[in-house]
Structures are given as structure tokens and as C-alpha cells.
Image (cartoon, rainbow over all chains, first blue to last red; front, side, top):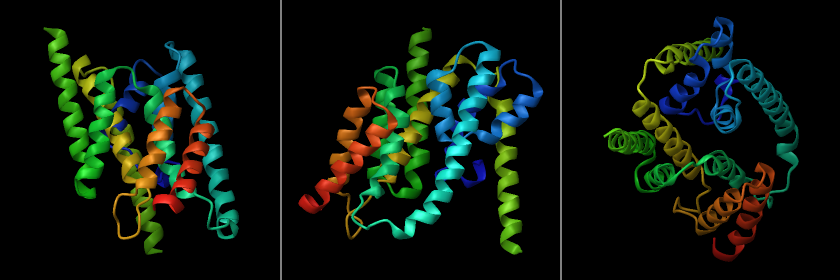
Length: 152
Length: 101
């Protein structure tokens, strides 16, 4: 599934996702799990996974497997239905709305909301090729500053 | 055949990166770094979402898309389901396009 992802997430998403997969989990899971990592699995697991290892594996594989099946079926349906759907259907906004669903419900505090705003503004204000790395770096910097203040 | 080779290489490289980042993400990073990475992930998802907004003719930022985005955020904050958020967002966008472009 990962190779066909429409919008590959950046290193921050990747590393944070892999952190979910890395802590005291069996080797087979650490090899299988990364195959299913896309934006959606990261958001689902980050927001709803149980803390225990066994529960986490079941939750992750259940969510990832369901997403993989839905993804594949949706691609097949899109291939068939895409050419016959009427042009007036406002489907071009659905992709952006999907990212809203991934980001907004999972925001935990004001700092994370600020990071989301930084990312959104960067995407508008900067050239497309620069928006993603700049957004990631600025948000990471904010996190480091806030973390340092909390630690002191 | 050349395309198949390219796809196979890209898929293998993507998977290798994910497995390798498991080592990077697992255990060895301090909490501050994890916090920064989570914020980075949030920012990236938001940036990709805004970058994928439909644009008006000529490439300018679409007022209809911005309105639909704002409405979607409000609906999503109410913990609505993904289907509801996407449905309402698309409906608002569809209504706004003929009005404001």
C-alpha cells in the first residue's frame, strides 16, 4: 500500500509512526508494520491505540488491514466510476477535507494547533517545493523550544 | 519494463526507509525530540492538506476552497465522523464555487 500512497508523509510522520512500532514489539511485527504506514494509519493509531503491546498490535493490524482493503477497493471503484461521474460533483475538495479529519481531531493543545497553523500558512505563503520542509523544521523548532522550557 | 523496474526500486526504497526509521524512532530519542517530531508531523499533514486545496482558474487561492476548509475545521472540532466532515466540506465547496469562484 505504501508505494501507492497519494501523498507520502514526511520524515516526522515516518519516525513518529515507527516509534509506535518500535517499543518492545516482536521482530516480525517491526518488519510487517512499516509496510502499512501512511498518513491515515499514523493518525488512527496515534489517536486511538491502547497502551499495552498486545492490544496495540491488534489495534494497529486491524486498522491497517481495514484501511488497506478500503484503499484498494476504493481505487478499483474509482477506476470504474471516475469516468462516468458528473462533473458538477465537488469531489476535488474531499482530499483536503480528509487531511482536516486527520489533523484537527487529534490536536491535543495550543502548541499543536500552532504547529498546524504554521504548516497551513507555509503551504500558502511559500513555493510548493519549499512548504513541506519549512513547515516541518519550524514546527520541530517550536517543539524543541517548548520542550526545553518544560524541562527547565 | 523500465517502468516496472523503477516502480520496484521505489517501492523497495520506501519500505527500506520505513524499516530503517523504526530504529531511529525506537527508544533512543529523548522526549523533547518526540515532541518536536509529533509537531512536525502535525505541521506536515496540515501543509499537505492546504497544498491539496483546489485552486481557482489561474492558480490563485480559491475563496470557495478556503471557506470550505474553515467549515470543515469547525465540523471536525466537534468530533464529527470523517464521512460527515468530508461530505459537508465538499457540499460547501460545491455551493461556494458558483457564488465566489
